[in-house]
Length: 231
Ligand code: CA
Image: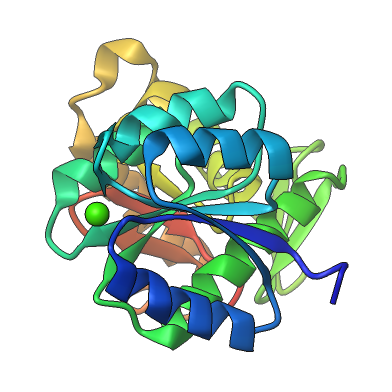
């Protein structure tokens, strides 16, 4: 068990903490626990966790403020624990460098799936790869070509850039603002309709059922996620 991933839980609500601990221990993870921002920072520095679960309402301040501090020394995925419907919190957390969020109240299945996705993303990010496959699609990120069922699919440069950005950050929720900045530049941060149009085009070209995409997922009110597996 010593090689099991170490998860740091930063959460002050003991009831929630108890549920998380039971579920994650059953899942075979090693755990570190902190009940405040200050403890969270110390634990993250001393234990170097593989993943962080972060509550936003902590006794010594807003969990959001911990994200940029963690990012100064750690690339571990940060999953924010957030109440459903708090879209502005989620967007702020993602823009600060969090990877994903786990809605409260938890479903164990969703919690574990999101943790696995975060850990997998970090492992895959360490591997340089030019060719990426999903479904019947093969994307040559270096050669900038896309094939579906072996036949080349024409993508515009903007479509390709958007697809490549999603694939390079797969598993991670990317906010509208992040994608607009990367693909269209900082002068277009409020043009969310560009994303709707281009995602629709990409789904039509690449998804088996564009109305029910398996890979190019919408995170309603927040942004988009390239899903490489179960969520
Ligand atoms: Ca709390």
